[in-house]
Amino acid sequence: QKEVEQNSGPLSVPEGAIASLNCTYSDRGSQSFFWYRQYSGKSPELIMFIYSNGDKEDGRFTAQLNKASQYVSLLIRDSQPSDSATYLCAVNVGMNAGNMLTFGGGTRLMVKP
Amino acid sequence: DVKVTQSSRYLVKRTGEKVFLECVQDMDHENMFWYRQDPGLGLRLIYFSYDVKMKEKGDIPEGYSVSREKKERFSLILESASTNQTSMYLCASSLWDEQFFGPGTRLTVL
Image 1 (cartoon, rainbow over the protein chains, first blue to last red):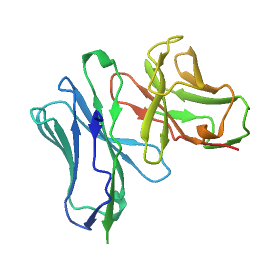
Image 2: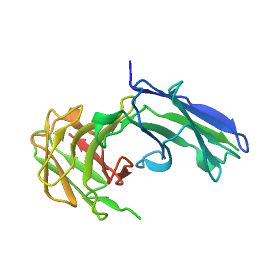
Image 3: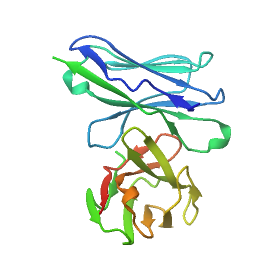
Image 4: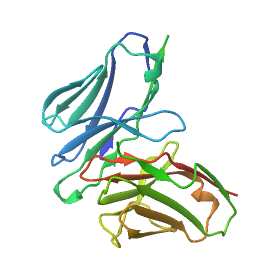
């Protein structure tokens, strides 16, 4: 079983809709959670991080964390074609992991005009 | 802003060549990482370093070595390049667990 799992997609949403991206993780000791956006042919770019249960909002992006259920999600409101990219979930998998992150395989998002 | 740079965006090498990929960060970060990314396999950690001259193997270290002689620079070395090392190579750095990536080097081994 992979430590960090994401649906590979593609997830297709119309412009202006809410895109919901989900990620589950297996290690209950995980401390911190990150969302990266990666455009085709480019490197990952950090867009959100969350450490505590609940919601964290930044502009059109909201990260949600539920440690009891071991999932983290990213909501993108008012989706734009420029949001079309692969979104990577990354998790710091526990106390002994130092500063290493484990990445999910990514979800490809397509926003259609 | 954190800046992580990599020596080449695109590189073409021949089988058996020794290949050096360089990564430099300008934020005095302790930790540096080398990943490779392949379609369907995601990001895989090759090596990481948490201090000068310190290195730790990641998930796929075979066929690679690293060097960190200065805090800001982390080099990935392919001792004898093979075709199965054709990939996108990504360097990252971090102070704590938030990693910042360089632009990547797309390496093709013929």
